[in-house]
Image 1 (tube, helix red, strand yellow):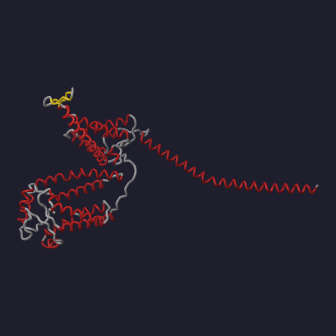
Image 2: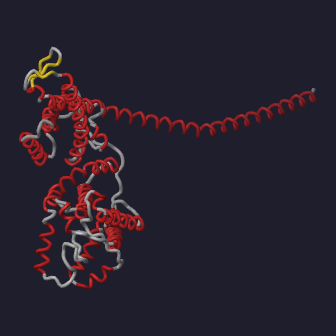
Image 3: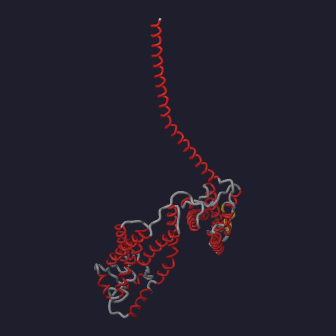
Length: 449
């Protein structure tokens, strides 16, 4: 790891023992001088890249759990931040001049297992090295045990595998990207990192006993999404639209320069059509507007307010029931505001884009809704999709009632059959008794005669 204390004279930190503190500090600064530019670049990009990589994870959480709390989003961001930090602080800083660095530094691997015990006895720096190697993998074990729900042996194996990959990457100079190893390979790190992952798993088990996991929420479409939910759905839509937009721009650019004939520096001819360079600059904005109309107007209009991002994260942009002119006004206001935001994003993202973004965020903070949500909804007539849902529920209720009546008829029928049989038996017995009585009367009458 980057905090490792030197064990050889060739290591940039100097000899392992008997060096004054001031000399060590000077050596450290001279060593970091090889890496200043790449290290600063990694530190600056770290939180922003983590945020971008968190968005698809948050979308998956929405899709799976039908909800997203602040802690879930924060946990996802922390997990990505940790993963990138693990890579950054074990691979960075990289030498800005690999040739000069490799000419003066020759780092060999440390293959003496349990050497960290001797290092820890040598002083504070050895203890800190041991502690840092354990602490570095504590979050990994905690996340795998708490959030991923893995077992102990899976967590320990993953910690060992990650440590082996990191150490091998350091030993090979990022798999041949650099001509020499600019980091110190240490077999003890594999052991201490794995111990850290196992301790993190134990902490996850203890924490889960104190704070049990929440049960996943099921079913339904969120008709009142929060700001984060809206932002994630919009980010998915923007990514899809931008991929298509850039593909169309590249295609049109290729076709234009293949078919256009340059008349001068600013004018081109495509057949009988005369095109200026100023008019070409409007093409990305026009395409962005057209894509917004398709993905953010036509698509949700036909699918009960669900865009592609909204369908994936189970939300609708129609927060209340609207029909007729109210629904048209809702989409018109949303297109004017959000459509302008999307066009500005893809035509340079100048100051007006940032002004509009800040205005929308402040509007949400104050109003807890977006401007288009202020369009009034229907008071008596439900929207088409809600009316359809009510009709479906009514149909289900009628079918259930009919089924219950049929079951009652089926149960009651044997009883009526039993009553009929008894009555027939009774009538049959009466007929037999009547016939016997008639025969007896006839015989009695014949005797009297």
